[in-house]
Amino acid sequence: MNKRKPGLVVLGLFAFTFLNAQEGKLIRLDEAIDLSIKNSKELKVSQAKIEEATAALKQAVNNKLPDAKVSAAYLRLNSANVDIKLKSNNPNGTSETPKISQAVYGILNGSLPVYAGGRIRYGIEAAKYLEEATKLDADNDRAEVIQTTIEAYINLYKAKSSVMLVKENLSESQQRVKDFTNLEKNGLLARNDLLKAELQSSGGELSLLDAENNWQLSNVIMDLLLGLPETTQLITDSTLTDSIFTVKNLDEYVQSAYTQRKDLASVDLRKKATETGIKSVKAEYYPSIAITGGYIAADIPKLVTITNAVNLGAGVSYNFGSLWKTKAKVQQAEARAREAAISESLLNDDIRLQVSKAYLNLLSSQKKIEVYTKAVEQATDNYRIVQNKYNNSLATTTDLLDADVAQLQQKMNLVFAKADVVVIYNKLLQTAGLLDQNKK
Image 1 (cartoon, rainbow, N blue to C red):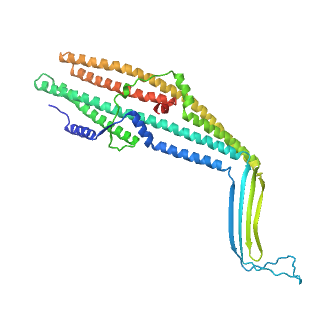
Image 2: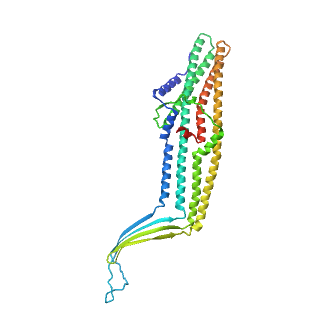
């Protein structure tokens, strides 16, 4: 009699029904990448940073433009005592003091910077470097999104493949239990051997539940990554793992990384920005020269009216405090420049390590496929031999079940190895700075 737990069977059927009740959506890897790029919140943040850097550049350029200020006022005055000592035309030698109760005036001042020691020019130059660096950071983030999508897609493929293999093996295991049950009823099989087969079948049901849960979770993760409803059931491209990858030599990938990596180019631009920052700080040692102009109009009833009071000239300003205050600022700027240079050197070393690791992982994964392909053939042949021996009473039930488990394990190893090589190959492209180019 079959001793499988009915609760597990019901739960397994429920999970299977839930997963298959939803309409499947076939999606290719390129389509998944396009959707993830379109809906990526990380890339939207990167775009906002680009807009911020562009605005900062415009602000730096605006420093070249003239400044203009206008002010006006209306004043209500009390009865002030005003004694104006002016020569009077009155024969008596006296003059009447006007009673002033209000005043109106307006002032317009403008200045156009001519020379600021290079602060404006260097500020614009540094802002350009930072804007370009921010754009390169966004390109690097795009490559990260692509690689994340590939990994999630392959995980979904592996989860589905695992469900299919476990389900196939469980079906065979359940048929074996039926056959053993009939043999045990007829006294042709020991009760202990039937229990071993039932135990393996129960373990298969648990494995199927775990595999289906993992598949469902991988599907939800993929839906969120692509911006799709979480109930969308995705179907991966089953031919993806049949792709043949052409691998170049290691030095080509390393050289490509040094010329194509966006993060390395970004660090280089930020280093240039810090070097420009030193020049900008040193410019504080110099005076500032500007063309100035203004217009004044005023009306004080019964006293004076001023119109067309225009002035134009040049002004020079110099902060003597910069002679002893700027030195510390220069030291800070130089320290930031050294830090940026060291960071660039560290990234160069890290890039070589990343590329070498990815390259060796790819060679290893390709070798694993060869080994697992042979192992599947061996495990299949071994199961066939053990089954023949068992049918001829030359092998035990334990031998048969162990051979079955070994066959399933090697099949899963081969499927996973073929899927992993897709991720590892694209990881190599990412470390070499070629991933985004390869997906455009």
